[in-house]
Image (cartoon, rainbow, N blue to C red):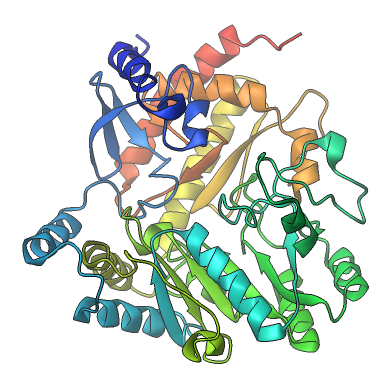
Length: 447
């Protein structure tokens, strides 16, 4: 029997009378048949207000690397809450967390804290412009760097406004953006080394930084092609630009040294969010002493009343210690479990003649659903993804999965947590088998 959601439906209808659009983040309205309301979670398990149980691979948009409600983190937050929730001043915890990040990430010589990765990206861009005296920042199509004016320029343009392959458009998906913001960016296509070189050369001497997700997780799940990250480092060194690695999603998921340790590069600035706070509103800007110099001198303003909040610091300290405790083998177990899940989903797809092609580095991956007639093989960039992925069919399959108790992010991303075990993967594939069968029986392509 499929799950039903009457209590979530009633709460959503109630919410729309007091909360604008009924949700507090626009992406949450994507969930079909209704934005769900949850009651509790434990490890990889989640229960909604209707009593439905899910094996969760959304994991708080990737923030819950440690699973839901880990007891140690709850104890750490509770202990701090009894001492104080906010001081707008210093406490020893902030030094302890900063020192942990220093030890784990070689490029993190100095650290500053914020409440969200969107804030950290804004600080990184300001710092890069002050450091270089230049205004332009190069970013890649499909990469997401927060919801602020600067973070979304060129993020996910619809095909009608792509621009040509050589000069991707600098558009913004939101109204109300200061028009001049668009002129501060150069957009390039991901995973084309020679194209990147041409884009940089065309603006040589004007670029302050290159910013990127080391694995593009916000649009499909696209690992960098060989040599790409090294080319970014080379070009930044050649032209005096800052290399900004946005590890909001990849940070600590790819190991204690994050994706930069996993792939072997050292950025000037690193954006940390999600897993660094274990699901609390916490983020960090880490960087070399040279890159952070303008903050040290006071020439760049970096502020925030709730920066280094003690409750979030307590959660972060516990989270970073959990990554350290996983040992040097981390993320091998995440990769093993994710690989088993990917293979199992592909086998179910083949059995039911569903064109699902899981793609990614196993510890996090995307459920690519091929359009009729689309070419097989790995997707490498944003435009290729739009051309080949069938979002309507994926949405239908995702709802079938949801109604059998398997939850992935609406856009198709799956994350594995340190709380997942072999039995969870087996149960997920058992439930997914029912979902694939229902999808194959009921899917009708839109006319």
